[in-house]
Amino acid sequence: MDVTGYVKEAKDQIAEKTSSKAKAVKLAHWATTTWVPNLVRSTILGSVTWTSYEVTTAHLVATSPALSTASDLQTLLPWAFGVSVVAGTVAGSLHGTLWSVSETALARFKREASSPFRVRGVLFSHTSTHLAMFASYETTKTFLMHQVEGDHTDVQGAACIVGAAAASGLVGELATHFAAPFEHQSFAAARQELRTLPLPSLRSMAPSGLSTMLGWLAYEFAKEALEAPSHAEVQNHG
Image (tube, rainbow, N blue to C red; front, side, top):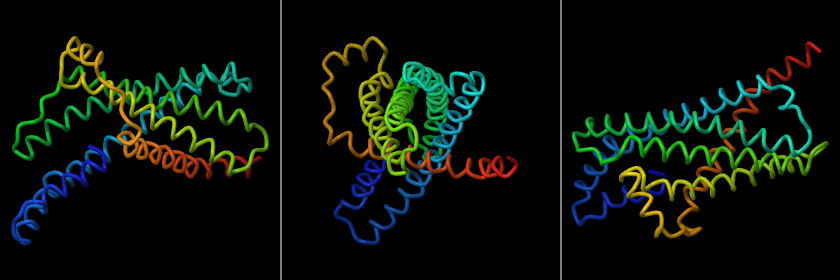
């Protein structure tokens, strides 16, 4: 559930016509049994996803230094796409696995029946969604950065990252929309549903798409902050 989902659920908790005290008690119970556990889960899943993506990407780049330093777009785009597909698959499969385990654990914690889902479908959905999100970001970023290669300004570099993050947010939402049926149905039934499933509107994709974009910006900021000391150390030794 994204941020807008939590806000809507919180509003539903206090929408009933009861006393202020009853609403406060109900909202507090919802926060401790639903919001906080899901916040912790989202934090853990997010950390594992981004870390596994970064580690896998770094390993693949290290094994092919010649390709990673190429300058022509014909080489860079397939390279960026291939690396992000592999890294996105690893990250997505881990996310799907941990989500399935934590969903069952949360249901036991709340002493409620967990919402029905198919593990294979969840793995397929989360893997394909993350693959699409990561691959679209890296290829778009590579293409845009190549257009301003050389002595580009910080503003131009930031604009490329924002553009790639926005594209990733929309592509990721499209992938999520069309992969969702596989989480609760057999593959045959899900494929049947896809034939009549309409395209999502931009308005419906905007909240989650924006959160994905902000996630990429946070990732790039953290990555740059972590790499800055090592770059400074290399320059000092040089």
